[in-house]
Each structure stands twice: as structure tokens, then as C-alpha cells.
Image (cartoon, rainbow, N blue to C red; front, side, top):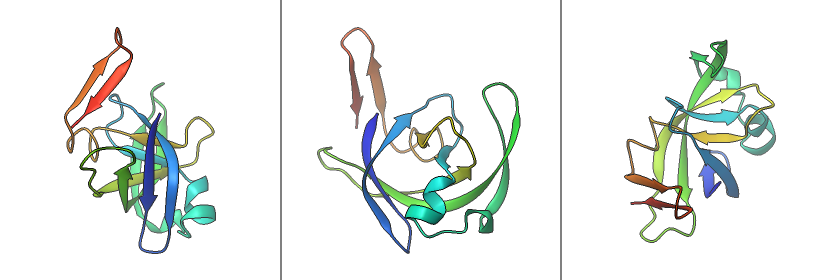
Length: 117
């Protein structure tokens, strides 16, 4: 899990965690964050159909959010589209568009670390 802050024009979540998911095309966020934490009607965003890991078609809604990786040297705020989905399987996923296209990421399973630059 990667410690991040995430915000929109209404409110910020100063510290939460996101899962890095190289298999996810987009950054995804659970719809529970929308109304309770970010004060967003998530269904007001652009409708997007997402195909889940099991091949299921899931309807989501895209909103531009800003996030920052915490405890990272020379950290910067990144604006990225996040797709709000109703799901009990995750909270926040950082995917290809919005994370991997912004950073160089090196995973070392053997040494149990992740290097993000």
C-alpha cells in the first residue's frame, strides 16, 4: 500500500492508502469516498464502462482528482482522472493512466521494495 493524499476542489483526504495495480488501465476509487469524504455526487461524472478482472462490465463515473505520494522525496501533486466505482473489493487503485504514465516504477519482489521516481 502506498500512502497518499487525495483531493478535489471541495475537500482533501490528508492521509489514506492506495494499491498500485499495473493491471488496471485507470485509477479507480471506491464510490464510498465520493459523498462521505470528498463531497461529490459521483454519478455526476462522465460515465465510463470498466471491465473487471473477471470480465464483468462495471459502470463507473470519471472525475479529475489530485493526489500526492506521501513521504516521497521531491513529491509532486498529480492531476488524474479517477473512476468512481461501487465495489466492496478495493478502496483506491493507482493504474496505468494517472500513475504509471507519470512515474517510473521498479518493483523488486526479492528485495521487498518499490522504487518510484
